[in-house]
Structures are given as C-alpha cells and as structure tokens.
Length: 225
Image (cartoon, rainbow, N blue to C red; front, side):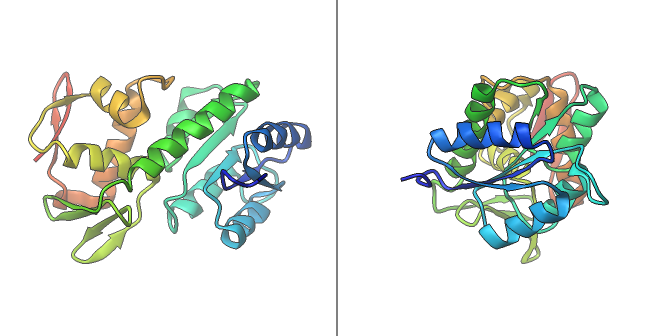
C-alpha cells in the first residue's frame, strides 16, 4: 500500500527538489502531499494531519519556513525536518530553537534525507511506548499523550523538546553529559554538535520556567531535579 508509512507534507517551492523528495519517500511507502508556499503548507497540515513535515526555510511570500515552524509549534508536536540552502550556524540554531527536530543542508542525498525521516519518526513513535506519567518538579510528563502539563494546562512542546524532557525525567538527579543527551534523544548516528542540546534546553526553560528544576552541570551537561 502506497501510504502504509503515513503522510508527509513537503513544503518546498523548488518543484525539482519537491518532486525528488516525493519520489524517494513514496518508494519507502509514504504518502506525500506537496505545498509550494508556507500558507499552503499550513493548510495542508491542518487538513491532512500528517505524521511529519519537511520544510524549506527559504519559502516565497509572506510566510517563510521559520514562520511556518513557529506557527506549527504553537499548536502541534508534529516532527519537522528543515531543508536549507543556508549553511550558517545561526540559521541552524534558530531553526532548532523554533522547534525543528533536525535539518538537512542543500544539496543533500535523498537517501540520507529518507534515513533521517525514518529516524525522527522512530524516536517520535517510541515516546508513546509506555502508559505512564512522569513528574518533573511541578511538570507532568504524559508519555501516552506526549504532553507536558503545568497546573493542569498543556504546554506546547516541539517533539524533540518533549523527548529531551522525557529522557531527563526518566533519570532524575543524574548528571548527564551533552553527548549522553545527544545519543539518547537524537541517536548515536545524528550529525551535529552539542550546541543542539543547549538550544533545546533553553526552550524548555523558556516554556516551563522555574516549574522545571533543570540545572546546568558546568563543563558537562544538565541534571533534572
């Protein structure tokens, strides 16, 4: 069945790139919906409720990729893979801080992109494996609903932010290095540096504040509790 892996929305204005991504994903059993603008992509996500979005940063019109990512994160924990022709560290960090789960810089290998899509979805799906609610300070971490709740209210988190919170909450009181966090949340095969962890920790602190007792272990990493 062509859609056995679920639906992926590809938001990319370059039709050659979009068609290439479409072809490789369909070969792996995904159903693909293409959108050429940010507005069309947001509408497609609301309509199709996909498993994942692949998002170009440099979209035409009034809603670029960064804005799309920000709007999605205000409402969904949908996994997001960003495509960018910009190879600057600032763009990558900004995309991750806005809630993207990973990024691929153009030009890219279609096979590598598919492998990253599968890895992101495996980690995302694995977060719901147990029926359990963890307590982290005053924050409830619901592993079934994949929600973080503060005073009974859901705090919207990016999927990678939630996975990082879960990983920390499952190991209360332990000092964890950035590399341990990268391996546990992003996977040992992830390409990137440990500043990714810092960016996601900043987002958790920004969204959950003092309710989350997430401390820095200087020169090493972080500890929850």
